Length: 101
Image 1 (tube, one colour):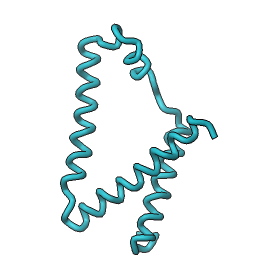
Image 2 (tube, rainbow, N blue to C red):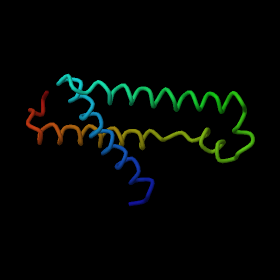
Image 3 (cartoon, rainbow, N blue to C red):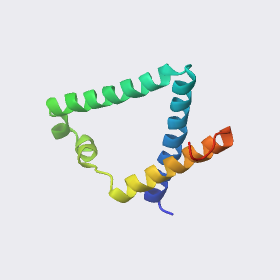
Image 4 (cartoon, one colour):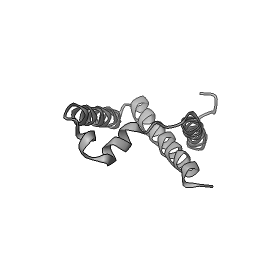
């Protein structure tokens, strides 16, 4: 396996575990903070990206240009989401829930 194949697997593992962690906290009533932090972190990243684009920083630093032009492939996203769903299901079954809920 190449590094390009390993990255979606690792990201999917983390996404599945994090999703179950946040969902469990929300359903049990003791975890509103992880969801809020998750949303705020994404808002901050999008805001920083908008500021960088507004000031034209991608013209000054080639690394920012490469980041701006990067688009994950459909295969990358599919593998990542499939692994995330599989991880979430395994955690759910091990934790004691039936796999169909």
